[in-house]
Every structure is written in C-alpha cells, then in structure tokens.
Image 1 (tube, rainbow, N blue to C red):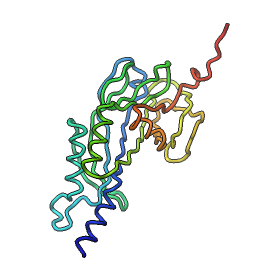
Image 2 (cartoon, one colour):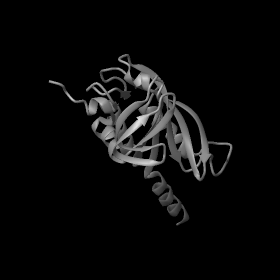
Image 3 (tube, rainbow, N blue to C red):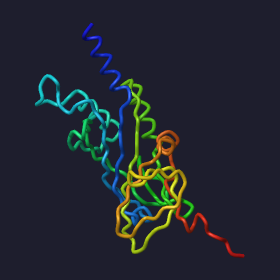
Image 4 (cartoon, one colour):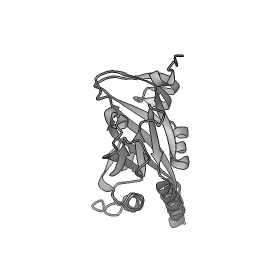
Length: 218
C-alpha cells in the first residue's frame, strides 16, 4: 500500500513538468537581418536535486530531465541543479537563433516581417518532439517564456506589447511600453502567447509603436 501511495504522489508531481525558456538578448540582434546563434537558459522544475536514498547521487527527476532535454535539444548542455526558495530546478543551456528575416532554428526570436516588433517562432520539428516526449513520459509540459531584452541602441524604443508581464510588476495585455536605452528589461509571456508559439508555431511579443500607428501620407 505504501509503495502504491508513493507511486501516485510521484505521478502527480511529474504530471505537469514546468519548463522555462529564459534567454538574454540584445535588441540590436533582434533587429539584425543576419541571424546568429546564442545560448539561452532552459530551467526545468524537478521534485529534488539529489536522490532521497543517497544525497551524493542525482535524483531520478534530474536524470529524466537530462534525458528529455537531450532528446529535444541534442546540443543542450546541463549546467546544475539548485534550490530556489522551496523549488528545485535543473538548469540547462540550449542554442536559439536571434535575428534574421526568414525562419531558421528550432527556436527563433526575430524582428517582425512587417518591419518591426518581435516574433518568437518554434519549428514544427521541435513541436513534434515535445508531443512525442509527452506521450512517452505520460507527462504534460507546462512551458513559460521570459525574455530579458537589453536595449543596446542609442535611443529609447517605443513599443506596443501583447500579453506580457513586464519586470515582474505589471501585466500588459495590449499596452504602450518603452525599452530604455542602455537598460535591460524582462518580459514574461502570457500563457496564451506561449501556447501560440509552442502549439501553432509563432507568437507576436510586441510591435514597434511608430510602425504600428504610422500615419500614411497621401
């Protein structure tokens, strides 16, 4: 009976695997017509970092996370497992594409095709891998995306954001915002925006204010 109870608890804990993509990028790279590869943090929440029976060993959760991430991202690198408040988290680095004008790479953050803004796209190949992993592990991924953007340009950038939490303070469903020159600001995407990217291939994070409300002259 005790073994059955432990199995049920473990299943409940693993039924929703929280995975956060947390890249740090430069605004100039997003706007660039030339795509580049950068390393992004990928954080997977686990029940524990170390084995209950032997603290010198990794927990089965960490081992399973390492296998799952390696299957989805062959070029991923496992960094460490750490505790943040009451949560244990396994940290990885994965390559993503930043910039460019056409879709490339499994995860890409680039300027909008309409001439401004920011789009996140997820390849069909990666979306299929996520589905296969969910089927094989009987767990559902609960992804989130937090983008740390550094405005490395010489001027402030006025934008219109779509469903983001800015700097862990204000939720902005559709609002004007400003990227301050020389500063870094973090956007956490809404569940709807994340779902659009991971299930349908892309989502719009923001538009350039000037282009969004550009008045066309005769």
